[in-house]
Structure formats: C-alpha cells, structure tokens
Length: 395
Image 1: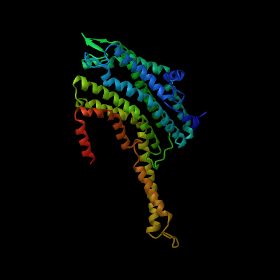
Image 2: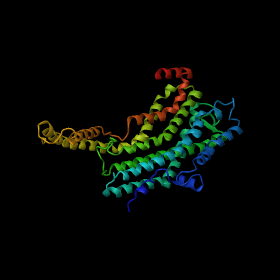
Image 3: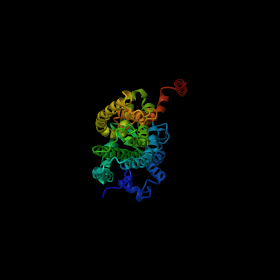
Image 4: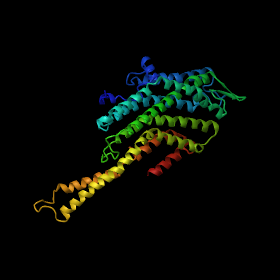
C-alpha cells in the first residue's frame, strides 16, 4: 500500500534512532520532540556542570597559577552553553520544516502514480537509516577512537597549563575535570555533531533518490524552479546548526588569540572553509536536481519556442496582415492577452534556476555561519572604531 499524504508528512530525519528512543524512555523527550528545555538542561548539566564543580574543587576554576582557568576558557563556554543547546534546538526546527517539505511532493502531484512505489521506497529507506542502531554505534566508536584524541590536543597546541591538565615530558597529565571533559563532555558534543552530519547524509541521499524519479515538473511554474521551489524552505531550518558550527570555530580561534598570541587574520583559511561547509551542508543536497532542471529547461525552451513561433505567425496573419474578420474588434481581444501570457511563460522558463535556491538565501546562510566570529573583530579594532566604520558604511 502506498503511503498517504498524511503519512508522508511525518517524514523526518530527527524522530528516530537509539538516542531518541532513550530520551523518550527517560522522559527527556515526547514523541514530537516536546520537553525541549528539559533536554537542554540535562545535557548541558552533564557536559558543563561537573567541569565547573571539579574545577572549583581542584582550585582551577579561577586561579593565577594556571594560564587558562575554567571560568575564562571561552572555547568551553561556547561548546557546552552555546553549541550543544543549538544542536538540540535545531532538531525541532528541522523536523517541523522537513515534514512540510516532503509532503509537498505529494500535495503538488509531482510524483506520478507509476513512480509512487519508488517514492515510498525512498522514504522507507531513509527511515531505516535514521533508526539504525549500528549507525549510532559507529558514530560513538568514531568519537572515542578518533574525535576525542584530536580534540584533546587543545592544551598541547596552546602549550599552556589549563584547567584540563598540564603538558610536560611529551605527555598530557589531565586533572579530574580534564578526565570528565575527555571521557564524557567532549564525546557527548562530538556525538551530537556527527549525528547531525549523519542526518544530513540521509537527507542528501533521499533527495538524490527523488531526483532520479520521473517527476511531473512544470517548466512554466512561477517559482522558476519548475515547481521545486518549496525545497528552499528547508534551508533556514538549518540556521541553528550553522550558527552552532560557527560558534565552535569562533571558540577555538578565541582561545588561540587570547592564550597563544595568535591574530584573527591567521585564520582566514579556517573561516573560508567554515563558509564553504555551511553552504555544502544546506545547498549540497539540492544539487541532485541540477541535471534534471537543466534538461527540463533545454527541452521546454525548444517546445515553448516552437509553440510561440506558430502562435506569433498566426497572430501576425490575423492582426497585422489583415486576416481578422471585419466584425471582430481589436480592443479587448483575448489574442493580445494570450500573446502576453505566452511571453511571460517563456521568460519564466528562461529564468529557471539550476538550483531551487536564491542568491540572497546563500548570503544569509554564510552570514549565519560566520556571525559568531564577529566579536573577534574587537581583537583587531576597538569597539569605538568599529562603530564609527559601521556608521560610515550605513550613512
């Protein structure tokens, strides 16, 4: 039995997986992601509060004897009090928007009857990947086998004594807070981030499968995307995730600036990579429709061009060369309006976008991803000078 439109609207890359089931069983989540504040408080409590308590007990929360006390470590504030909550908030935003987007394929009748089984199979396949226990176990293995080791290099790269531990004789000597950070807090954050990347993979794979269907696209659709313009609705749903990623990068750079003497200009490659990754995360899945839209545009220009040629010739024969009946008035003739409508349709086809997206939306996504870096400009220029430059630009 094919899925109904009512069933398809529940498609989501968020509502599933072992962690989601665990949240439901421990009353940290409802079936449609309720209890948001409770999840944020509990997860942030697990990740950040023990670090604070242990740092206080060990005398590393605020101490002149170490270079990076816990309470002034910008990177970890950003990790656990900004990025981690945003990863959780993004789930609700993406879930609500994605249900609407997937439902549009059926409500707009873009899926012909003969392609409905393949459409349903694509949804079922995506849901199996979303619910995979093995996938989340692999993510955990990656976090503990690779991610923790790489991220633990922070104190080493800073070459500083910090609340996490000290580095000497080629070895890292963690504090109790540092052990909790390494074994609990950081893996939790990395798992949530990798889990989001996995969801983006599922979404990209789903759209790729849909792009291979014989969709009932309309080349003259006013959205200038042959009826696929609704796919752009999902883009802004990922803004919490993009902002969180930007905040993570900003936190790393801030620690390097304040505690290792680096300058913001040294991180241009990292900032550029951040902008590119932000675009690929959101725009990348939509690239699957580029070949289909390009072929549709070429075919429609030929078909509408041939039709327009025939219509214009008949229009000229009738109204320019005297073929119109003597009793048919020129004013108010539907032929003129039809000619204008034909020209508008042809113009719409000429403006079909290769990606169902707008340049303005691209700019907005990049801005969201890099805006967390804006406060770091104050390390290069005073707030007063920055304000004066902004006034100059505006006025």
